[in-house]
Length: 203
Image (cartoon, rainbow, N blue to C red; front, side, top):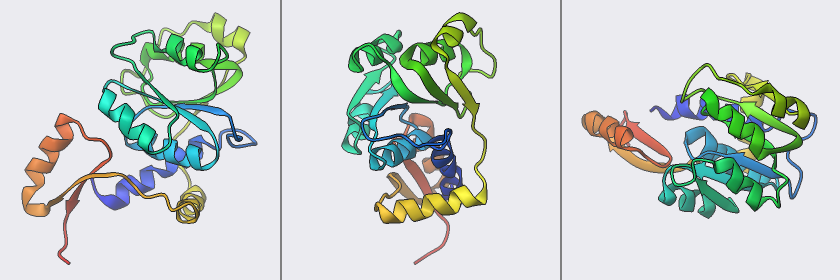
C-alpha cells in the first residue's frame, strides 16, 4: 500500500521488459494484465513503442488500460479461451512478449498466445504456484521462459530515469488519510485500478 514499496515493486515491470538482449521493438506485440505491475508494464512498453494487448476480468479496466496506450484488450472472464482472442488480434501470429502474473494452468494459454520463438516473463502466480504444463506446444513453438523476481537497484534507478524521461506517472485510484486505513483496505478488497494510497504524514 505504501508508495515506496509499490514503486520499488514496479521495477519488476522494467526488469520483465528486459528479459532478452533487446527490449520490445516498435510494432512488437506485448501482452499484459491490468493489475498494479501490469499497468506499469503497459505504460513502459507503450513508451518503448510496443503494441500492448491487455487482459482483465473487467471491461472498465480494459478501457482504462487503453487510455494509457494499450491498443486492445481481452476480457478473460467473457472469453475463457483468451489466447484465441489474442491470436485474432495478431493475425494468428501471437505476441512477441507476454507478461504472466497469474501462473497456474493458465500458462498453457500464455504459450498459445505467444508467437513462435516468443518470450514469456513469469512475474507472479496469483492463480497457483504449480501448473499442468503441456510441454509439446512449448517445444514446437520454441517458447522462452524467464522467471522474474524483485529487480536489482540498478533496474530501479534505470526505471526511474526512464519514467522521468517519458513523464510516466503511477495511476492513483484513491488516496486515503491514515485515519481511514480500514476504508482503504476495503477499497482494495473490492478491486481498484491502480494504486490505493494511505497517506501517513500531513502536508
